[in-house]
Image (cartoon, rainbow, N blue to C red; front, side):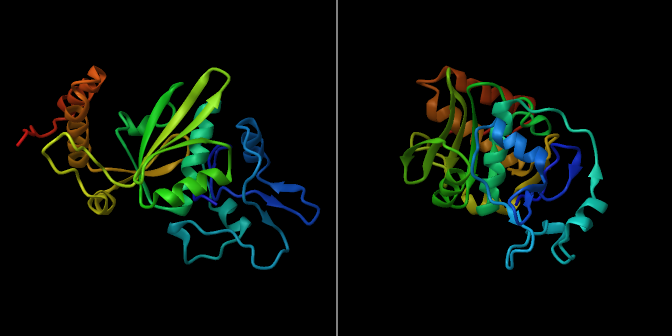
Length: 247
């Protein structure tokens, strides 16, 4: 289970507990959200079954992992409601980061994410392993996956009108039309900054320097065919990014 789940106002492990008769005894609200997102298969913990214990949060790795411990030490706070597509996105991202490292980049306002994710929007994610990330998403839903290359894939959530939200997964950065080297995956992961969103998702973002460089590279990669990419130059200007120049 993921480290943080605050849909009901509690910050704790995002686990669903069932008893010997497979009745939910803890996590009913989370289960209802899963049903609403058309997700029918998730890992659960069955009480009394040997060898099945919840994974502790990183900050509590050395503590005894019991339900009472986490409830007693929970941080209570108000959590804004998520739309259906935002909830699906959060569930997918949580499950990916349970299996492999990930960094979200080109998030315009990290402290608002995912509350500002709109219908049809892309979310760009660097992952340590693309194969592991795709396998993780497939465990909890029915995404439409397009493998664009050995190092990039689209994971799409459809509704009756089309693509509701897309996760654009990268295992490495690649800008063949720009004579500038992209930041390495290891460099981005080593310097990444932790962010906790209002929805309870804890995730990593790049440093401002890496973010500036990635946006600048993407603009120059697609400037001849996709004028909308000019927004990255505006973002860089607003955030005081260094002035890069083509070699």
